Picture 1 (cartoon, rainbow, N blue to C red):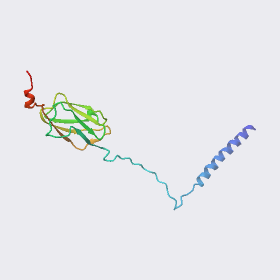
Picture 2: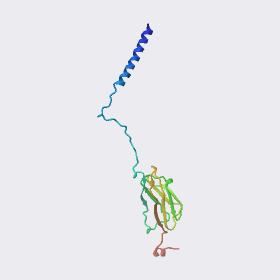
Picture 3: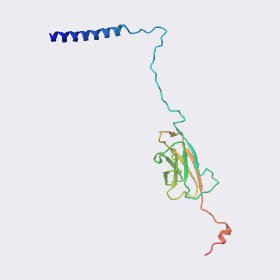
Picture 4: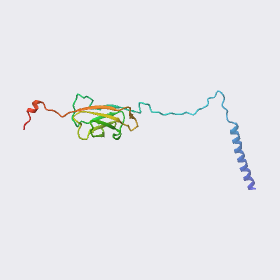
Length: 162
């Protein structure tokens, strides 16, 4: 007798499930012609060209070929965003070995000669730089620095004691 009751309850349970399923199929609302149909939204994220470009904001000392600097003058380059020293490729003429070091600010690099700049004009071309965001310089950047040893005036030369 208990088996018949249990079997009857299970049968009723399955029939209720079937009825609910069938009702859900038939009760679906068909969209009316005037109802808007939802469409999936696609979001496209792109980087604006100005954000993906690396620029040199300033360079110190300012380029002035009529101004003489000491042969051990450091050059400070301020970029639009952070640049790692290892990504800065430069060419000097006449050829000079340099150290490229981070500056005091996040987006600043220093170019320092390992010995001295050659007396006269040194041309420095920044061939490539890549920021930490992946931005690159659009084209090479040229800079000139004129160096000279300090000279004494005739009056200073007369005041030198042996």
